[in-house]
Image (cartoon, rainbow, N blue to C red):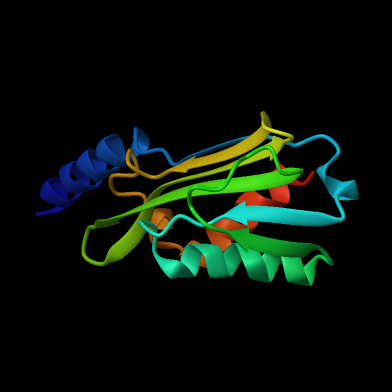
Length: 140
């Protein structure tokens, strides 16, 4: 029985060792001084994603406008976002991307992926916390 438990623990350790959650960011230089941030709405993404972005902006003293999905990215500071949820015992944020544009040119981004998370239980963290961390990294 003991050797079975040792083998089981070893198997779990080997399987979970390759399970990574990635979070890569490139800060949008100059965005901290922005008077107003425009967010292009993405109706294909759960509403909570946009709400988390708006909460972060408000709590950090930024004014924002939400623009329709077909809005032009060359309207000052503009954020776009994509979020995909998956199912593994529960629904969780699997992939996310927030991009920052200044006058139509991409100047920063924050990318998150838990698709290689496997047994990594951190993939089940609250989506709004992940989104707010992405915003923090984008505004560094």
